[in-house]
Image 1 (tube, protein in one colour):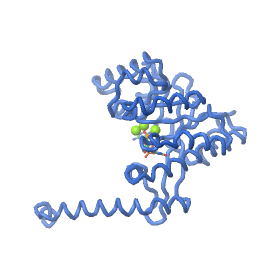
Image 2: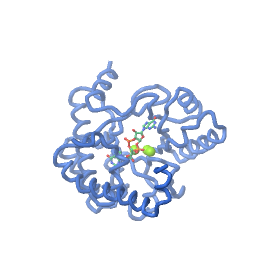
Image 3: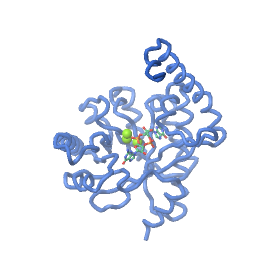
Length: 278
Ligand code: C2E
Ligand code: MG
Ligand code: MG
Ligand code: MG
């Protein structure tokens, strides 16, 4: 058939790659305008304490409401924003928006919880990064103890660059998490030496638990590693009750995942907070 023949057409993959490239260029071009037009929105995913089943925090996750394409997932545009450098500006918006919204919830009388913001390595490396965090807090009036930053493991391999920044952020009372733990490469030595508070185990380590015994023991080792380093251990992507019980039994501290809640828009998050206070 025509479809199979196209695989033997030497130009087939060129067209495919060209399409991908054009799509990237399109997205890259659209990002600054999207920010100016207010097309970005933050959703919030609850973090739950396994022991008490109570809310311990909220993770801000960006969404793009494109007027033509509808909602575009961050997996599709964050890497492009990183390549083009636009992530610095976009990340600044995320920080301010998350701080502003959290302060607004607090002022409305909801229980005070930390909001965590994902920070790209490129953004973190930027010389103005700490200043940007400071001004987001100052302009919104959010107490720094209600802000957490999530950075990925790869950043840990640049200890000289990050040490001072992490120390300063910690001294301000801002908590730091390692996101997607287990998917990158990080030295356990740096994990011990750097001022970190939370280890977030990537959901690939949770998805086959508890049916796969090999995955179970891998997961247990990661939990133990985190605990022995004195970190709070959070499991990402918990989808089932069995996973919930397994993690609770084995000393994991917190979870996030569809089992408890998907990321919610700010309106639904406020409702969740309101329900949590009584
Ligand atoms: P992440 O920080 O590891 O966030 C967790 C992702 O897993 C989110 O996808 C969340 O919706 C999804 N998730 C949560 N629970 C479950 C579950 O039980 N099952 C499954 N299958 N998925 C679950 P999302 O929102 O699409 O974000 C993807 C990634 O994009 C994030 O991974 C983060 O790396 C990045 N990202 C999102 N928002 C931002 C942002 O504001 N700034 C930066 N730099 N990166 C962001
Ligand atoms: Mg995250
Ligand atoms: Mg993660
Ligand atoms: Mg992840």
